Amino acid sequence: MTRSGHGHEGSEQRTGSANGTASVRASPAGAVGRGGGDSSVEVLHSGVLDTLGQEIADGRLPTGHVLTLDMLEERFGVSRTVMRESVRVLQSMGLVTSRRRVGITVQPRRSWNVFDPRVIWWRLAGQGRDAQLRSLTELRIAVEPLATADAARNAPGEVRSRVVELSSMMRAKGEAGELDDFLELDIEFHTALLRTSGNEMFEALADVVAVVLRGRTQLGLMPHQPVPRALDLHERAAHAVANARSEEAEEAMREMLAEVRDAVVPVWGNPPVGR
Image (cartoon, rainbow, N blue to C red; front, side, top):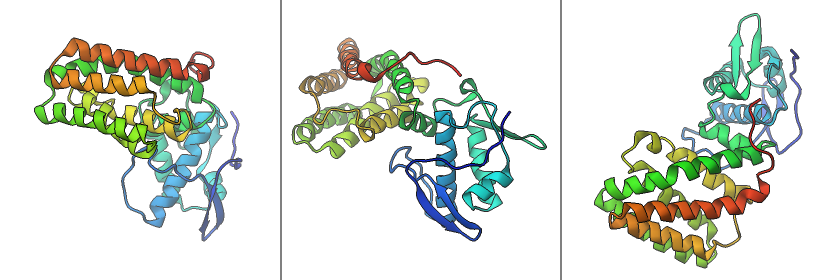
């Protein structure tokens, strides 16, 4: 096992403290949809958490690596309270364990909560991007067509009307090149179908899909303008859901995600493997 308290290169935000100046990674806006206030403690906690989480996801802090609170406090220049809270959150994600007289030990990927939106973001934003993109795309292909068929059977009337409206708005925003607005509509479209599928397991994946869509856009993995066929398929799926045509809804979503798969295959790299 190795011990470390050293910094790293990358995009950083300088945060002053009574103990000096620490380098912490700025959290990407809207990446994980975290709520909360804007106190200095929360800002420090978020920065420390993002930096350590990214380093673990990247393998810069490899499995078995051991850190201590003293090392981390010195590195980041934050209070023990902030450091303990950051470690607690990392532990809740399965990224580390913390034991007295042992320290804070980085855990293998099989222990991670890979469905946590923050873990997904760190993997998408780091060196594991290709494998994470492949895993998430395959998950969407397996789940979303069935969820869309279920939504066609189970969604309430207002959701059926809303997805039709969303698909129309997406076409207008996409053709106008208003990609930020398009992204938000796309997220609402896909999460609405998952959340009204009537399957609690599918519903639980809504935040995961939202992070995938946001991450692909922020990381420059989306086309500069939506592909016309993708817009057509959103409309087709929406109208099938609105009219309770479950088989057509499922097929439209399956075709839509096949388009996504074809678009991201060039950056998939090697198949995902455990570590």
